[in-house]
Image 1: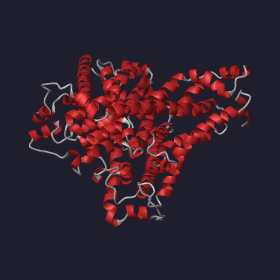
Image 2 (image 1 turned 90 degrees about the vertical axis):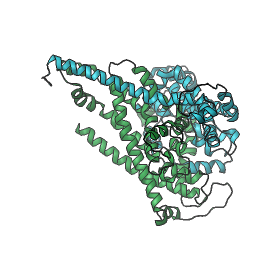
Image 3 (image 1 turned 135 degrees about the vertical axis):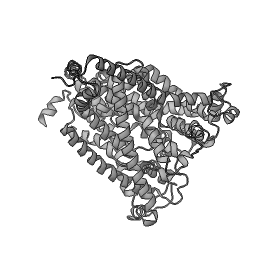
Image 4 (image 1 turned 45 degrees about the vertical axis):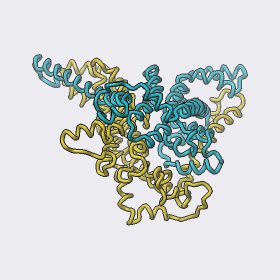
Length: 282
Length: 302
C-alpha cells in the first residue's frame, strides 16, 4: 500500500529540507544548554571591577584568583569534606538498605511480598513530612548532628529496593540452592554471593543516590543549626545570600561545587544515563 | 503460601527476617512515622524553636489556610502549583519528545547534544538555580537584551512573571531525564517497522503519527504520571530561585518549607506547615488519579 505518492525529485527535496531543519534544531538545543554554562565560566573569570563595567561581555583579563578567593571566603574546605563524608556514608547506607530489602523481594523469599512492594510504591505519594522529620530528630536528640542527617539521607531509599529486586529476579536461582547445600546461612550467602551477583544494580543505586545526596539542599538546610556541618549545596546557597551582587565570586563558587560532578559525569556518562533509564523503568 | 516458602533453600529463616525487617525498621521509622505524624502535627501549633510548649488547636490551621483574609494567597499558591505542574509536564514532555526524536535520527553531534541536555540533572538544583539567578539578575544578559527594546524587568521580583521564569528554568533543568527515557523508548521500537514504512514511501510525519507515537504511548504514560507527581511535590529548585519570601510565586511544596522553615515566618507555625502539607497530599492524590485515568483511556484509544 502506497501511503504517499511523491515524485522522486520532490521526495529528495523534502529529505534535504528535513535534514537542514534537523541540524538547525540540533544547533538550537546545543546552544540552549551550552550558553548558560559558558556564561557562568565567563563571569567566574572577571574581576568585580570588570563585571561592574561590563557584566555581559567576553572576559578581557581572566582572574584565576577568583577560585581560591571563593573557596576561602565560602569556607568550602569544610563544606567539601562534609559533603564527601555525607555522600560516601549516606550512599553506602542507602545501597545496603536497598539490597537487604530488595534482594529477598526479588527472589520471592518474602511471603507478603505484594504488601511490601505496595509500601515501596506508596513512597511516591506520601505527604511532605519535613516538619515531622525535623520534630522527630529533635525528639530523639539527633537534630543538628551529622548522624541524624546521614540517617535521613540513607533511609530515602526511593526506588533503590525495586532496582535491586528487578535485578535479583534475573539471577539464576541455582546459586542459592548450591550455597544452601554447602551449608551457608542466608546472611553469609547474602554477603558472599548476592553482593557480587547484584553488583550492576548496586552500582546503579549507589551512583544515583550519590548524585542526589551531593546535590541535597533542603535536608541540609533544615537539619543543621551549625553552619560548620552544612553540606556543600547549603553552603553555596548561603554564600549566595551573602554575596548576591558579586557575581564573579559567586560564579566561581558555583563552578567549584559543579566541578566534581562534571568530572564524575565525564567518566561515567554512559553509566549514569543508563542508571536513570533503568531507574524509571524499574 | 507453601509454594513460596519452599522456594527458600536455606535451613533457617532467622537471617532473612533479621536483615529484611532490620532494614525496614529505620525506613519505616524515619519515613512512615513522620508521614503519618504530619496529620497529627497539623492539629497543633508546634513551632520550629525546640522546647516551646505547644497546644492542640483542632482544625484551626486548616481554617486559617482557607480563611477569607488569607484565601487570596492560599488560592494563588494552589493555582501556582497546578499551573507549575501542568506547564512543566506538558511543555517538558513534548519538547523532550521532540529532542529525543531528533537525537534518535542519523545526525552528527547527537552525542554532544545528549550529554549537554542531561548535564543539568547531574549539576543539581543549587548549581542550576544559581546559574539562572545570574542570567536573570539585575545587570544580567537578559536585562541587557531587554534594554535594546527600552524595557527592564525585576525577573523573580515581578509577581506576574516570577512563576513563569521558574517554570522555564525547571523545564530546562529536567528535560535531560525525560529525553533520555524517551530515547530508550524510541530505541525499543523494532527497526523493521521503519524499514517497511520507508519501502512504502511514508513521509516523516506519517511515520511519526502511525509508528512512533502509538508505540511510545506506554513510555509516555509512565513518564507523564511520574512527572505530574514530581511537579506537584518538588520545590528544591524553586526554593533556590525564589527563597522563602516570594509568596506570589510559591507552590504548595515551597509553601510548606516557607511556613515551617522560612526565616521571616513569625506568624506561621510548623503546625500550619503540616496542614499545608496535608492539603498538598490530597491535591497530589486527586490529580494523580485523574491523570492516570485520562492517560490510560488515551492509551487504549491509540
